[in-house]
Length: 251
Image 1: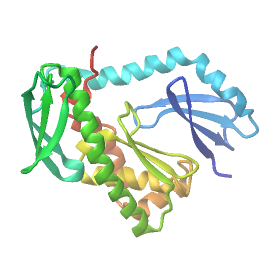
Image 2: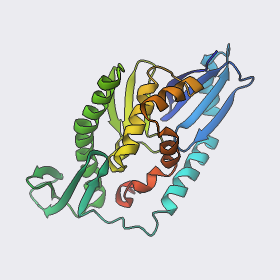
Image 3: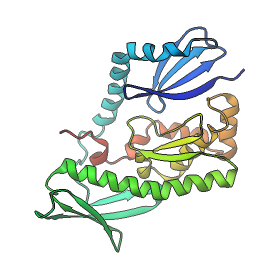
């Protein structure tokens, strides 16, 4: 009998609960791509899982911090200054960024201009505010373009999804709930189109198989024959995310 999976959240920690017919004991594992996975044997009382996850919170945060440190070490010498251009390879767009100091505005205003120019006006000397404002704009672009792309893929291949959300996440590139709601990581905007499509196919196939069984991977390969190579490339896909956006902001 194939394993069954579902996505849950406790104290801000998102995890995938996987019921496996082959598991004999409860097992927690961390993945740079999938985040926290809790594997339980059939018949295990799922009510106990949140308490179990909470009891291992220190370990979870330690491992997650190790993943983040490994990512950030690659960016230590990278340019983390505010961008003059933003390359959104995932949706095939390139934007020039202009900053205009405006003492009349206490908040940063973002607007698009002709010629693929995005303008930030207000207290632009505040880097944290600028990055937050750009993030808000990126979410709007991603919701507009990536949602359309995902819906088109679903329609072309006969998948049914309930909804789409886009959020900036630390580890997972995407997720699919048991109700068919798909979440995409905002950072997909910076990845090559082939990898963005792979993640979308990856999550769409979870609407049919909420696990990573052999049947699931056979389904993925049907829609992406290069899925094994794309999956390998995703292990280092965070390198495509520019340093100014990848690095955590300090208050």
